[in-house]
Image (tube, rainbow, N blue to C red; front, side, top):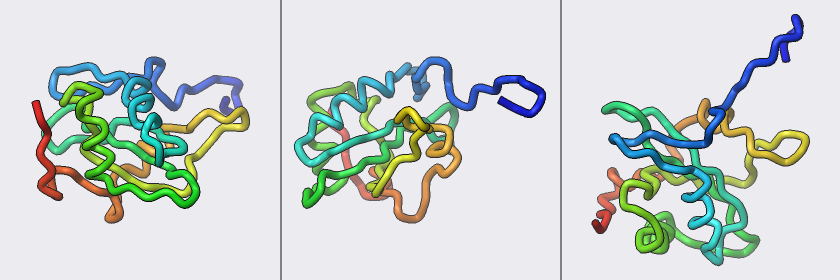
Length: 130
């Protein structure tokens, strides 16, 4: 809410990503990723594509003492979701930005976008199965 009393929405009213003509539920992608035994929490969100529309990115917190590579995580995801829903970008993070009531502030993740530390499956040569 701004100083004049107006409310501004900083995230999508529906939590969906549009990628190459497909609608992707970030909630559904998050449910698959968080089912991996090494994952504590995850936020899935859109980032700008160099082509058009969006690419899928996941910010992942691992459980204490757990390790998994981005490629291993995508190997886990592929049989559990449609090929177009598999994240292109993966960031392993220590924490996610949260509101006072514990919801992820995805607008902050979207603003941060892809960094030098972000794993990119296309640059890594990772091949999706169809």
